[in-house]
Image (cartoon, rainbow, N blue to C red; front, side, top):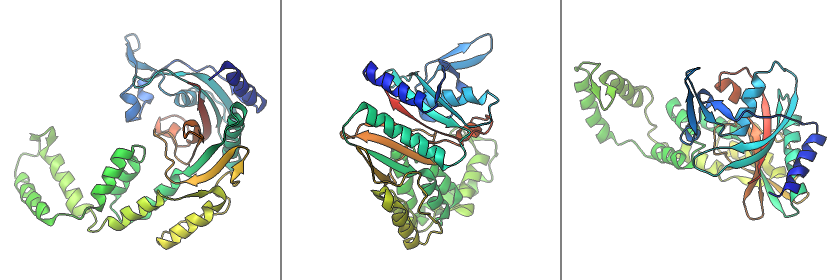
Length: 334
């Protein structure tokens, strides 16, 4: 991105009341919970503190950690600029803008509106702003008649499309009773063995417990096809944002799901703003486990993602930090 565009973005954010902060270039690895990020860290060990650190792989994560160490409890608007480092990609330069201790939907709207203003300032080309809310899929899965362990597996894999659809494929496959009978015979034999004996790095006790959970306590549904069909059909939903509440309400009613959607469910309700088309897209899901509610992205006419962001209210507690409600976005500069 040309330096003139960089200065334009900084000027916009400053005019909106965002205060720029300098981010620490390193992060203690205990804060990296995402398995994808862990594989691509540049790490080193500090012998004095006996702690392992890494070059920051994500700027938003670094920003949240730094803010959590402050004692600020009021709504705060910050911005940052810098590079993140991962082994699987070149140096990634970003500018981000975030609202901490956010309180209501107006903060979500402000972050989206700022994202639109940034896009309009750097290009006159048409693009698309896609909006989703990850809580929708979570609500659907939690109402389906499938065992809790399967609900957890489905929701845990939504950030990884490959494994997500593998889980769905296994869920919709009917149980092979013949194979279960064979497993039951092995199970009965194992009950007579020393529970601490290791088989494939697992103890007999652990294998027996997992088998009992799968077959007796939380068996796979005899017909998981209906549940998988509902999930897959939901992930096909998309429409102009103005029509989204009606489309979702009809979908939930048709599939007998007790989920209510108000007309003002989404923070923005216009189909077009400037050179951007705005749509609801249920398949708009981030690649990393940061966001827990609203998620959006802005792509140009070549379908290249330029800006993305959303709500990450649960991230601070998952990192064992003080609770911080947050919403933000970032644009890639390289």
